[in-house]
Amino acid sequence: MRNTEQTSVGTQNPTRFDVHLSGARVAFGSADIFHDLDLTLKAGSFTCLLGPSGVGKSTLLRYLAGLVEGDVSGNITCSDGEILKNRVAYMAQQDLLLPWRTVRENVELGAVLRGERPDHKRAEQLIGQVGLTDAAHLRPAKLSGGMKQRAALARTLMEDRPVVLMDEPFSALDPVNRLRLQELAARVLRGKTVLLVTHDPLEALRLGDNVHVLSGTPATLQDAITPSGQSPREIADPDILAKQAELLRQLGAEIAS
Image (cartoon, rainbow, N blue to C red; front, side, top):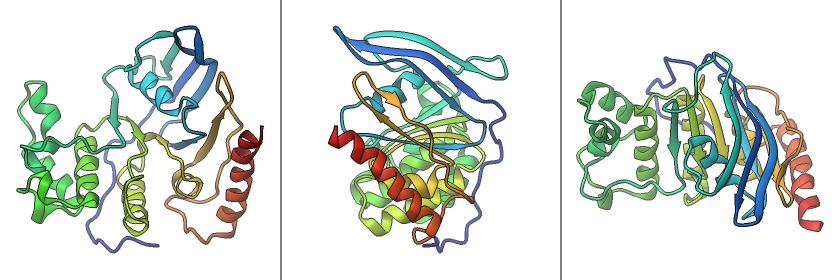
């Protein structure tokens, strides 16, 4: 499936550094969610993470964002020698739009909260890139679910961070809009370093350069599956269908155990 929008989209500031997670541990009480967990996010790559509910996918995402409370240890380093803090944009599963702010005001929210003057021109460009120019003045109550997700995506891109963390951002959408938003995300985030949590194997294989399954207690990462070609990939691609079967076997093995 191909998006029919004609607006040119894509990042102008590609990520130049790898992110290395080593010896990561998160525990709540006496229970380890994961420990000694290692993961590398390569510069400009799209990594997808699957696994059963409750295994720790969202916790790992929040760990990288610096949002986890609990017993936390491990190291996050960047290959350019800088720290990851303040270089991350986080997009939750819910759109989290403020109901009293318009689309444009929501897109500009980060700058406002930091006491900065919003870049109105950039906000308008991003709103156009996600196809919401005619809805920029509307509040969330007037938007469809897909439009809200587009607004949330524009708000995430407005931050222009080199690393983007996304927690099931398309899960509430109908199948057609989900495919369209996948396509849009693949194009607008190309060149950024992205970690996407999803329950959908086909979504992971359409978008991911590397696809990992998180499984077990404490959770561990299985070896990555690496689809060929550039995302967004066609859902009927024979290679994607073969790798989907492999990915389902990884997930099925966890369920069977």
